[in-house]
Length: 443
Image 1: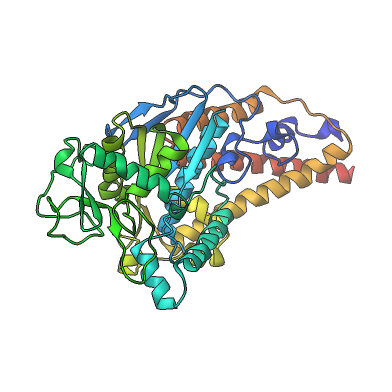
Image 2: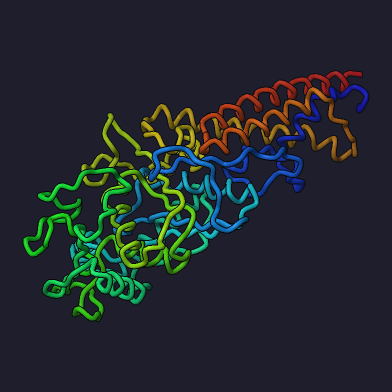
């Protein structure tokens, strides 16, 4: 049989088959659900370039400490099921996390939960349950959803309520440095005392407009000043502080938790582009106001999910939850759909796009199944097939293109297109093998 087996076909098929030997797995599969480890024999990757939202350009990624990466991504506010817009962010940064690990970096990845917030308090009161009960329930639901999407667990998943002391200590430093002030138990950041304010977003300070999520408070020195600490209100959770009982503002939590786990200088801070202002802008201001050496080497932001040219959002009730989608489609179909659009661009949600993604995922699995079925006979009979130069070049070219695309700011669209072309070649060789086997059976 070995003499009649098309050598190129067997060699190419073995490059895709899922087996114990991970050296046979094409690099692109690492982005779907395969282990995030480098493929032995893969060519050296080009230098990694990432788009930095601070400088507004692609830059070579050079970690603060050689071989190690610290990455913080803003997490969800757990008061309801997470929607596909959330999946957009967490799949995007899971791809980055996997690729950094693939390149051999030791990555410390932090993704928080904002488990105390006005929305959580309001929903808990509506439901007649505690804030802790509500937030814990939807944290569990979120973790179940991202696990279905094959997102790797971060190194740390802190909750705001676990870091109140860190938050209070950070606010003390900001006040000590004359960058914040106290009014009736509330603590506000003074944007006028921080000349670097708006360096990330590039906005022009509007003295008559507050940041989103907050109403203008006439007690503020500047309407753009934002809350670091909110005085306690009846029926709301609160903690003791030097300024009276209260709870943290929205932005201070991420400054405190990122510093606690990664230090005042770390490599990557990510989130949706809607967080650039005010959340990340205010984070940056708080951190530097407390500790001037604070720095994020690379700010990264993903695009939205749009429906009818409008951002998917709970606030306008035009959203689908992750659970909605993965009930109808394979979870990896949603992941594939999200990866089909570059992380910085907006993706347009449609049933057709998800159906196409579903077909592609089925095609991948069917190819893997067919490969395993055809090659199982080769394994059983211990048939060793040398790899012809032409077929080896096809696999090598695929891996080279994968590395070039991924190292160029994570061009997953090109990666998936190339992977589909490789699968077509493999399926062509599958047919050759099947014909050959059929002919052998007739002899």
